[in-house]
Length: 507
Image (cartoon, rainbow, N blue to C red; front, side):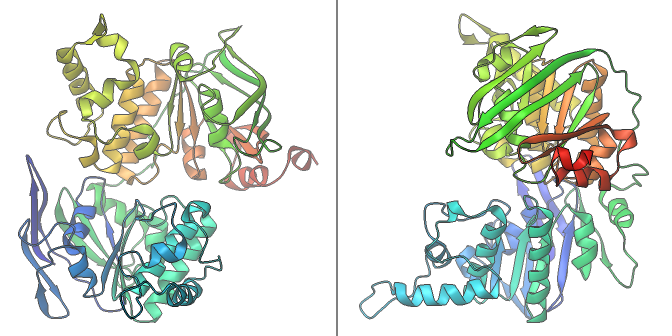
């Protein structure tokens, strides 16, 4: 890609960006949120067609002018977006061949041939599920494999993966990385965008670093002796001596407690997602919740926040020494609770809204009179949060769908900070965002704690919990198995408590 420049109204997303990918290599693209990584790949794959940008795409010696995704796929360039392009209600086979179905004489779809071919493709990506299985019945890791099977069906030569492991657990992530190595062995080139720098260091042959829409440098991983600190320095333009900002906690009395909390699974009545859980939070304290995927962390958080998950059975919520009844989300907000969900694009934001409406959405009553919203105040408050949280956007009238992941997360935080909560529950608050944006969000969390608010942080990254929390609870199969001061914990201790029951820990 030579001198690629792409502009949106009021924003130059890419400014004279150039990069080279060698045949048969894994080439990583790193940069902070909003640096232009995804935009660059959308140019390459034809999402942004020729004519909407300046510069040249040179592929196998020829200048390409892709009109759309079909024209790039016809050349063997296939992109897998962070938000997977699968239809949940359709089967694996139907998704793999969607828009590219094998046909019989006369034009009818040859489903027998499609299923036979699907079995072969699934075997190549190491997925043994029945090809008639509906996508909605697969986990995210398996859905990623279906996307790669789709790409193989299109005779992929250059595979683009945008944050492929962002929503995967460690085992699924490792399987996917092994698969990418296997594709490399067959001569397939890959471009990978990821914020997980340890994975980049492990799998990439070369790395192009983009900052503020410009190419900063390209590194040869082996020749240049690249490590995570070196990548970070290129991404943010400075060394991050500490991944976590300094903080001197000022922890007060216990003000929030959950006691003997029992919740059933929403579809399976005999299964409990919370089993007698007990947690407490002090003012000014950051409490971590650690557990493997499916352990019940999110289920606990959502059931506390207005019983928005599962079937409540029994338990108490005590706030400031008094039992409070929280039967819905409105009750939760009214009692000073806020919840930033792990899926900002589905449960955190309305992607059709602009930034200013998203910022005030959780408590319109603060800026309304006789049910009429004061639009001047709405704009003023959104602008104040834009500046204080450093949201990268020219105006709060911009749609939230156009923001990068890190900036969308800041808007979600602004929305709940606007409600002035006493307790803020953050579910995977830094998932899919870069180290620079993470540092900014850590600062925001610390500021909230310094104001005397309680913060619960759910994270799959143990170093994050250890670096951020004052105290950590571990959860296994819906049960709180351990509680420890973060200063006395380590990753091994946490993992032991996350993978065994309480009685086993006691033993």
